[in-house]
Image 1 (cartoon, helix red, strand yellow):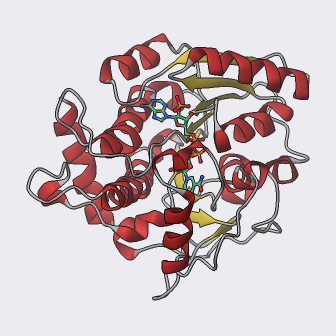
Image 2 (cartoon, rainbow, N blue to C red):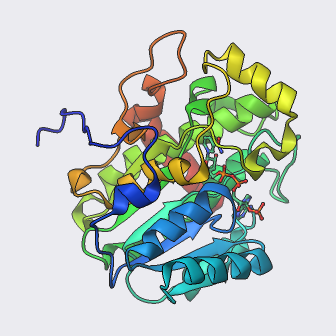
Length: 313
Ligand SMILES: NC(=O)c1ccc[n+]([C@@H]2O[C@H](COP(=O)([O-])OP(=O)(O)OC[C@H]3O[C@@H](n4cnc5c(N)ncnc54)[C@H](OP(=O)(O)O)[C@@H]3O)[C@@H](O)[C@H]2O)c1
C-alpha cells in the first residue's frame, strides 16, 4: 500500500463496535483502555473483550471500574477484564501504573478525556485539559513503550475529536498563562496534541513495530458533556455546522476506535486521523469534518514531543 493511499473500509458512521470487530480474534492479546468505566470507553472495552482480548480498564474511579468490569464479563463471557487505578492528571499515578504493568501490551487505547472544564490547574501549574488529555497519555504511552515494543506490532489509539479544529497547539502559551482561559480553545488544543502524538510516536517507534493513529469518535451523549448545558451544546453544534443533534450511540461511538485498534486494513499504518470508520481527508471550510493540516504537521509533532519531554522532567 502506498503511504499516500487513504484507507477506506466497509464500515460507516452507523456501524457499531461489535460489527467492526466481528470475525477478528484477539485471544492472547492484551489491551488497556483508559477511561474504560464511562461512555465510549465502556463499549470499546466490551467489543474488544467480546472477541477474546484481555482488557484492563485504567480508571480513576475503581468502584466504577469494578462495576463496569463485572458488566462486561457478564455480557461477553470473557473473564479477563481487569481494573487498575490511573489518574492521568497525576504523574505519580501514571508512573505507578506503567511500573506495575508486566509483559507485552498489544493495544493501548488512550481514550480518557475531560472537555471544556472550568479553568483548573494541576499542582505543577499545567492547564487541566492539556495535562489530562495529552500529558497524561504521553507519559503513559512512553512509560509503556517497552511493553508495546515487546508485543510485535503493537497499536496505540489516540482518541481525539473534531474539536481539534478549534485550536492548534499554541506553543507560545500552552497553559494559558498569558492569554485569557477559554475552555474550548483548551480542549481543542489538547485534542490537536492527541493527533500530533500519533504522528511523532509512529515516526519514533517505527523500528519497534508500533503504530499510532488518532480518531474522532463522533458526537455521543456521555459524561463528557458534564460541564456544559444541553442548550449550550446544541448551540455549539449548530454554529459549527454539525448539522444539529445527530448523536451516535456509545456502541457506534466506539466503532472507529476499535477499527483503528484492530483492523487488518491498518497493518503497518500510523500517524493518520480517522472518523466515521474511514481515514479522514482534510477539513473543508464551513464543515466540522476532516483534519486540520496543523494536526498532522510533522514539525509541530516533533516540537510537541520535545516540549512534552521537557515539561515532564
Ligand atoms: N462523547 C463525544 O461526543 C466525544 C466527541 C469527540 C471526542 N470524544 C473523546 O472521546 C473520549 C471518551 O469520551 P466519552 O465521551 O466517553 O466521555 P466520558 O464518558 O466522560 O468518559 C471519559 C473518561 O475519562 C476519564 N477521565 C477523565 N479525567 C481523567 C483522569 N484525570 N484520569 C483518568 N481518567 C480520567 C473519566 O473518568 P471519570 O468517570 O472518573 O470522570 C471517564 O471515564 C474522550 O477522549 C473525548 O475527548 C468524545
